[in-house]
Length: 295
Ligand code: SD4
Image (cartoon, rainbow, N blue to C red; front, side, top):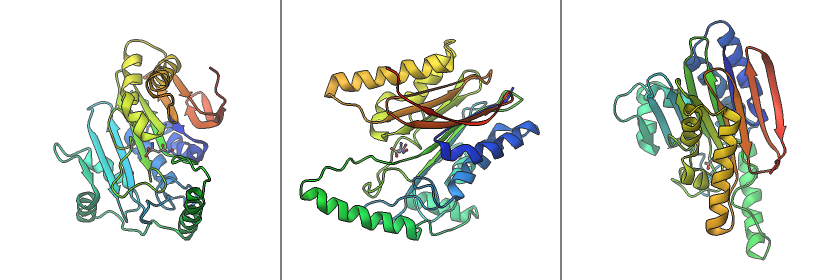
């Protein structure tokens, strides 16, 4: 069995490409990297790679991670600027014994030394969004409410290959108008992603500040390791974290998770309306689903 599951409908071309590799006995590392690169390269996806939305200083700072579920090796970059494919830099870092998570200038120096492609990631479209938001923020000061998290689509994937290897990976520009240097859950192991070929793999999207409070990707993989089906594991962890946050402070930010186990069974849970995801397995053509919240 092989399969891939990814956050948001935009990932469908990526997983289709990954699926071609997996059918031809490609490995879960190459397939997930190729699938995420596809999303990073597309300029109209506003929260990932090229065309990602900038921070409050109009700089595109990207976060990405990769985890190998056989070795548990992790690589991650955070707040990296001017490189085309952060997920590939993260994967390269996962092969380092130490220094496998690098931020900002340190990550850029490493990427340059390793010969990764430099690219100005700020598009005209993203600049226009930035200018519009600055205007809206001025209106907000005059009384109009604006949520800090809106319209974001981080890509997170879980992948299983024919050899039983599982991987997880993420890539994002993080929150629009974030502070320079702000890092979300996406490059943080256990929060934005986790993979263990013996138990399963999971990845998150939503408000990083809340996702990190539950180490939620690890929690889902842990529950799958206890024998829970991915769907039950996702629902248990997502609804529990949502409930905990509401009880403690009256609200929870957006929390959405995808997961797959070593049998290729998959699951999804969300606390928002309109979370979409894309999935493909040996038995299922690449398919996009839209989740309406049932609670
Ligand atoms: C973050 N979790 O940086 C990311 C944002 C996200 O869809 O998932 N957007 O907090």
